[in-house]
Length: 276
Image (cartoon, rainbow, N blue to C red; front, side, top):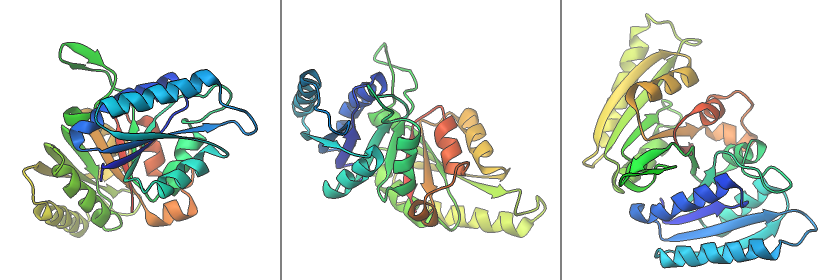
């Protein structure tokens, strides 16, 4: 699921940091990276930016990737989705923030627009500083990215898609995972033992289907979903959050304030967002 990657670039600091992080995707088996820049309508891309793109493609080639760059103009979210489809990518990787020279590109409405409508998984980096080889690095990639995944499981809506992605990641080096389901306090009472038993059984079944050396544990929490996911991040120190967006959401567009959007905005660590 990581073989072909689309990486939008707007030359902002965050965007360039995302490029540096993407170089390490080689450790996870990524083979091809397409760089996409969406320029302003009716304006030519400055020659220095063209040279930057050419240099970035050269760096990808030097790192062992098949790589190319695409320059287009139009609505950034729509162009990103179109290119992801035409390039047949497995995943879109995006910075969590960063402004272009004249307009927002990889922040706010653009990144959320892609999350809402993409049929492809999306990797969002939050650039949590960590020490690698005695030096500080502003992202978790390669073996560090998939050290420990917190997998937010929506039963039964997203369990099948997450299970497939989870299985693939275990085959790419994921070491440990925590399967988490939040029983919504707005829908169920804390004394609803049958619901708790059902959720625990479903998580155990999902765990049992994963044929890999991953160390897997299951957690069932009660309360507000986004709050509990963010609290669990603080409690267990995962390296990435894997969370699904329901099919009805990305076809119609998620509304502001949904669980996925709140977690994307507030998570201090990278996220892998999986359409369900």
